[in-house]
Length: 184
Image (cartoon, rainbow, N blue to C red):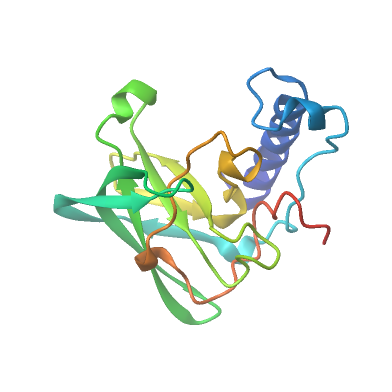
């Protein structure tokens, strides 16, 4: 899929997500806010934050306990690999994780929680996520325009894993969803 096709597919997915958030009884947006919900805010599509990357797999994935949005609760993941890429000429590394019980939740996927220089300013302070379907080839398109907020942004009834320090990027990732409550 080329960049223009990616941009169009992402725009379609965003329209569907807004529709779901506004109208579904499964929406994370509190019911009393759905009537006034006007849609999520996003950074303009940034092709500079789309990377063709190969996952450097970890042979014996170690367990990683992630803190969550609820104090005292944790989530268990396995650190399965690392992506390396550059943002504005600066080398970056970000780990990918999998849940042991992911077979319950659907097809195998990689979970990439991260924080960056926009966290707490224009994006949710605790961080955002990217999900990727597992690729047998080990080659992926890591598209930060697909970065999304965890459901705990919308409602305290959700428990969300927090990005571990090893996935705190020291650059701005001005792509994907902005903070739900931020006006800018």
